[in-house]
Amino acid sequence: MIREADPAMEGIKKPIRTGNTFEDYLKIQQSVPAKGAAAYMRVSRAVNSSKLSLVEKGTCEAMQCLSQELVIREQGLYLIFCHLNFLFPNCSKSPIDLKIELLVNDRVDRQTLSTLCASETCQDKTFKTLLQLHLTELKVEDRISVTLNHPEFLNDISLPNENILGVLKCSD
Image (cartoon, rainbow, N blue to C red; front, side):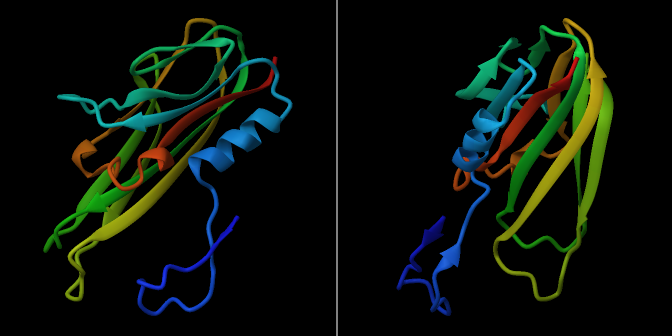
């Protein structure tokens, strides 16, 4: 998709190619011949919890989509993916460690750790995007969820549709 540059944006003279938005991923996921089970849900900060909430915008096929977890209904090999955007509103003078944990039955099955380092030339706002992929065997009634060690930095204000948790069944 190509969008025209906003004349108000300084230094941008050519059209900007954008993509990989929630809607783009949803279209791709719906066109892939899945093996029966798939979920593609927006996530947002949960109140008083490091576990992210699932927002009802998305798709949920052959699995149960609860407020904070996806419940598997068919055993098989699944691809779990999580795409999150972070906003640091103030310039930090010390490094910040961001940790994403993909949980299966409330146990860490996969984690990603990324350190945002302070810079002497840092700006007022800093953005960071993290993507986590995990291919794993899941059984009936397995529960999938995601936690953050700093959920307060999840950018669910200016990029609410870009934070997703997806699960796609690959084989029986």
